[in-house]
Image 1: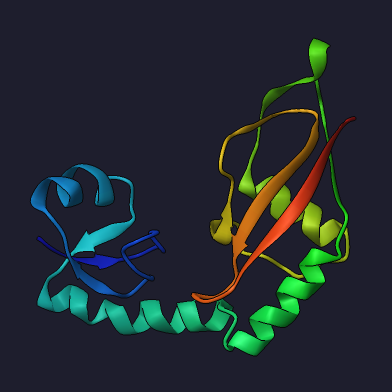
Image 2 (image 1 turned 90 degrees about the horizontal axis):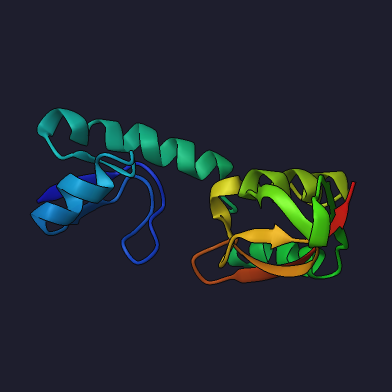
Length: 148
């Protein structure tokens, strides 16, 4: 099955890429979740607009990505949230929450789709989160979750 990615999918590609995947994976996972659209000649024309939007918000060069990674490395990110007994959170910390906390700590504007949370953050404490800044550059952020 031929698809056009609308969002970045690990291991497959970037938005605007035309990929070929198995029918079940495309039909049952990628298309229903909005990660991809079916390839047609009409949809092929949308690829240019998707790539233009991606280039506008993407970190363009590896050098710039390394500068942002260095800046993120020295950043102290604290996230205040409501907790119950035993230090458990009501819900979980999302990528959007982390992006907002980085902005609040005078860090760079991060796209929430670039933030990868390995396991859901549901407890108070320090957690490591990775950020894909460029295809060749990843950064890690230590997020300190505290009681509000």
